[in-house]
Amino acid sequence: MLTGRVDQATTVAGLDVAYNTSSGRLAAAAVLLGATSLEHIGSAVVLDDIRFDYEPGLFAFRELPVLLDALDRLSTRPDLLVLDGHGYAHPERFGIACHAGLWTGIPSIGCAKSPYVGTSEALGEVRGSRA
Image 1: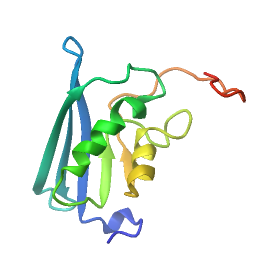
Image 2: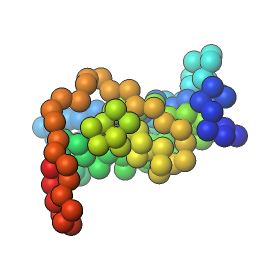
Image 3: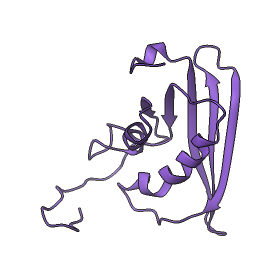
């Protein structure tokens, strides 16, 4: 059992989502590999409808539910997660990789395909505030 040390991970799962916006569908995939050998251990794909419109800064709300479903379908629980998206590098210091790590209890790394572009203002104190 991994105790939070990434260097002790024996398995790693990569997670990503692909979209077909014309049909309103998505595919979430989880691929499990040996951490040092990169041997394929298992994979899972979940097909679903897009349930949350894209909103900058709220990527986890769009992708995490279906990614967790794909993760649950793996035959082995991974020691480490690598997600397409930001983790601590998110402007609010809590991107999808942080959400995944907190939700699953599995150490998680964000590996975004592109840098986060734009700025955000401080969130207001009133419930429902947006930035």
